[in-house]
Length: 286
Image 1 (tube, rainbow, N blue to C red):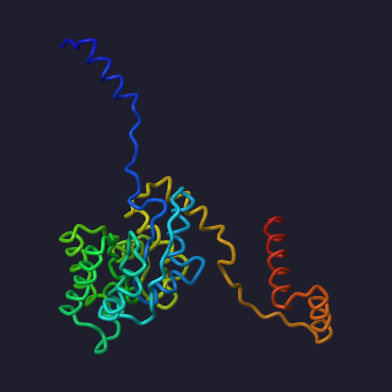
Image 2 (image 1 turned 180 degrees about the vertical axis):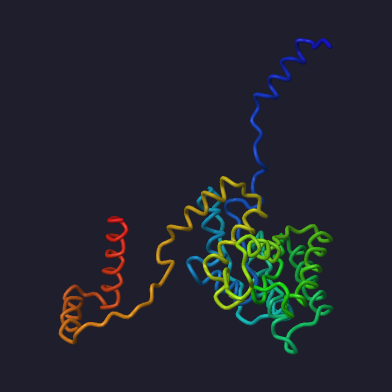
């Protein structure tokens, strides 16, 4: 088979042209509202909560987005629908992530049955779309780190609905529940010890990072960008409060207090700084 000179040149050009990954869906200057319950409230309140990690990751990859806090502890789908205008739409974000379903199931008789839940969530999504707000639906994370317990079996139907709704409404969906279950299987969890949560529901740092990574991948960040984000997360200042008891004499306490007062510093601030310096010294020796 013979090729013309032009065909040969075009083939070379195609080989030489780099293939770029699709740009992330969220752009610099956009606002992202994080709607949810206590998991989302914690995700915004902690320096290593999932909402803050998402914003940090976007920033380190050159995307300057502004977060809008819309997580309220204990809230269910009906309450999120009721406050949607006040907490989200009035602030005119370009994006909203929606995390809802845990309390609708976990609260039992005080929760929201599946059919009313479907109605509430559908209305939230439709109101956002009508206002020009793009929605990323998050499947509800686990209620206890055992997929076979009663709550998680019930929650599965809620997440089936969310996946279908995202398809029907052409929304992005981050399958946090699926990712969490897959991660637990990978580490060989027996469901009796919490790996990604503090109490079976609310995230620990590993859980927040798992959530953030899933959201970022759904936004379109690639492996290299995710790795860059993870490196940034590990150096987040004031991420952990190291609890402990240090017993000292009354004389030592008085001397420390006098030293702090001499430098116009609260004692707890002075001690925290001293401990941080000591930790740095230990790690440098290692």
